[in-house]
Image 1 (cartoon, rainbow, N blue to C red):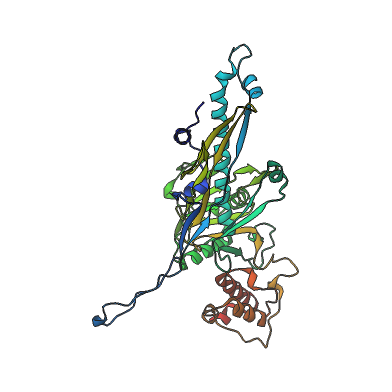
Image 2: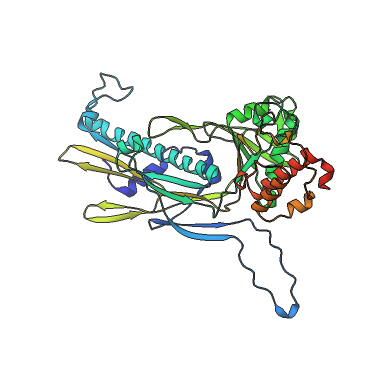
Length: 438
């Protein structure tokens, strides 16, 4: 039996690695801190221009734009497994009944199996944390004291790590297209409309100083896209062979389907349909159905806090990604295989990506009773040009203007400032005519 923690850590590192798409590609491992707290540092992608300066001045001190650093308490992930004498007396899976193996022969094998199982559980949690940051901008972590509480979702202590300040500005809400009556993807029935929405997403990021290179979507979104007859013309055919797309190494549950040219911007397209079994026994998707995300590899990082526990008569601390431990209880004739991890995945730029869901739209379907495109122009409305709309500096002012021209369904909760402006411009164009925006 191996009980030395450092030996177990080295052993765990040598086990065949489990590939985690979101965690490894977008939140690769960073520092591990000898503390229960981890330091996170984020900075918005700024576009401040350098000033002209009178030569004798020598320079003008500039403030660091959007920088944020703070220490956060790392969450505590700790699965454990109990091994009894009765467990070792049973033959292993696939073992011949006449093998003649003793419980002592099976002991190390069972320990290794439990270590591997616990490690995979932790890595799945790491992946789930990464996808939660992408879709919500925060981590809502419920810590439990017992397995029963975890299965029932009761008596949990909730801890929140939020990576945005006032509101989560990384959700893009799709707009409907006038005249379309489809019931999928917000009524977008042709590839041109799809690409227009995706180009608008890329434009939002580009204006933030962010260069996204990955387009990740769930399987249902990919199915809708690939049923569009004219969709393939948007691919970069220099990188596509007939019947084959140059492969990119991806884990199980992830497919790379080529490089997509969105109005001159090339994106690696991934289909992500991986699942996990939650503590209550239900199977869940890492990404909700209908999800599209524009991301960049290395857009975040994962830091770790230390793990401390009693060894003999003294407490010891370990600063590692996963810390395994095997302890024995001679009185009860049991052994426990324990694993600990304290990860904090976080984005380097809190506005460095966009996520959308095709089943959540900004103005509803065009064939609904609430469709704004059914409205009649207000002859008394005072209209702004597109430049004047884009010059508005607050969401409240955009909503107020939209209301004044008949958009009574628009609220500040319906998107970012840029998305609300785009919605108002689209509405004015549909209802009052494109010439009113000139």
